[in-house]
Amino acid sequence: MKLPTSSFPSWLITWMQIHEVALWGAADLCNFSTPEDSSGQRFPFALSLAIPMNPKIMGSIQQGPNHEYGDEYVRVNNQINELSKKLEIEIKDQGFRAQALAASDRTDTVNIKGDFPQKTAATRSGLGWIGRHCQLITRKYGSWIRLGTVFTDMALTCGRPVERSFCGSCTRCIDECPAGALKGKSWHPGLPREEILDVKACDLWKKEHYFKYHKGHVCGICSAVCPYGLKVLKKQDR
Image 1 (cartoon, rainbow, N blue to C red):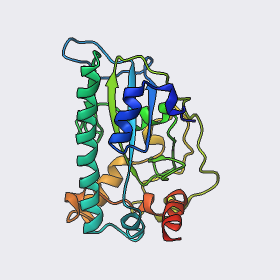
Image 2: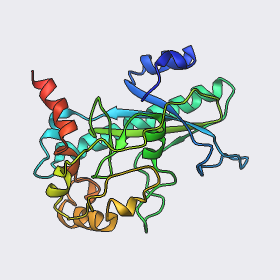
Image 3: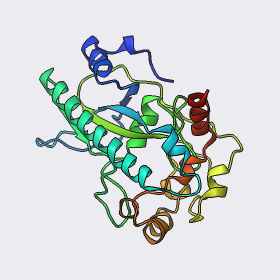
Image 4: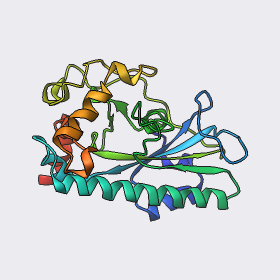
């Protein structure tokens, strides 16, 4: 459950409004290994931003990705990187330490992951839960989002972490995954990614079948068929 925005400093609320960030929250990461700044200090908090994808584009890739989706993926990632860097600068101007985490940045190419799981900051912020497709699902946008994270030492009133899945018995993403990479496990905090997703099988399928779309870094079928996302599309079509 995300805290009301009145729990945050007024300048931060204003910043989010000016930059049209509709879904965001703060996470307590004191018990997690976060990146270090140049002085070797770690960050105890993070602001998590969820930026929505175009619903019509997302709805169009239920049978597989297309060039519009590849372009949208890049556009939103660029938007996140720009916003996160601006927020990092703003927090520093307020007198605190801050460090933005790049969107979809694979620093470990062997295990196919980055320096810190952005979804951890998002679930700890109360923005949503991890679905059986290993993506964050929010009530407002489903999993049709990309995530941004800015670490900080600025004390924040953090959201209540989401600690259970709300996917129920739905297995739509598993049934539609062309790589057979989804294992069917229902998420809970601390469950290793490998218990939900065979990330190497997913990555190999994308590179072998969808290389022409952003060099095989995108697929999106599992997210496109998620009922929580499809609700967004239905609302838009009304």
